[in-house]
Amino acid sequence: MARDGRIKAIGFDMDGTLMNTKVDYDKLGRIVQDEFEFQGVPEEIIAEDIKANSMTHGLGWLKANKPDMFNEFDKRIGDRATEIEMEFSDLAKPYPGTIELLEDLRAVGYKTAILTRGGHSYADHILSRFDMLGLFDALVARDDYPYLEAKPAKISMEHMCGKIGVGCEEVLFVGDGTTDYYTCMNSGSRFVGVETHMDREQWVKIAGPSVVTVPLVADIRRFVE
Image 1 (tube, rainbow, N blue to C red):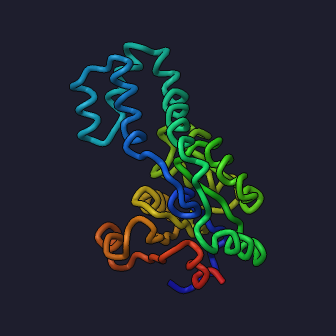
Image 2 (image 1 turned 135 degrees about the horizontal axis):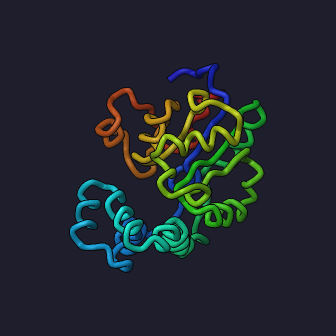
């Protein structure tokens, strides 16, 4: 992928892309199911959502049967997710060359932003430890908007782009997972995958042979300088 003069901003996932972090993703993956079980959503409805990788039926049941809990759903889910994320947050550190890359991107005029499924306070905590908050024009986290508007929803990228004043097609986004890839496919942003958790072969199986990947985020230099 050659440098594209239409790109005005570089967007980043945080965990596994900018920062080497430890998060109990097994716990995170069960949050919605655990909340539905706690609220008494019938097992068959939960099973239907699990099969469809959805929350639609469970939320529909809550709205009809426990409207107060339906209205508190985003906050309850977000608060529990942040608790899990914070467990090992002090072990986080930037991948090699990350800070230097961000400084150089901003020096040559790119806008920079983070779009993460992590909680805002979690992201603030980690980035502040390394004085990195000032290296971004915007930070959009999971709990800044309704839960259903987080990645990979198209609107998540639109939220980020709106904060930095660019169109989705003017963003090169860097991420380490399929959620990041599908966010870009849904929104029309360019994508680069880092190989911190998936190697080149795994990326190709998911995104096809034309997918652009790099070992670490600092290696995107050749596409943007």
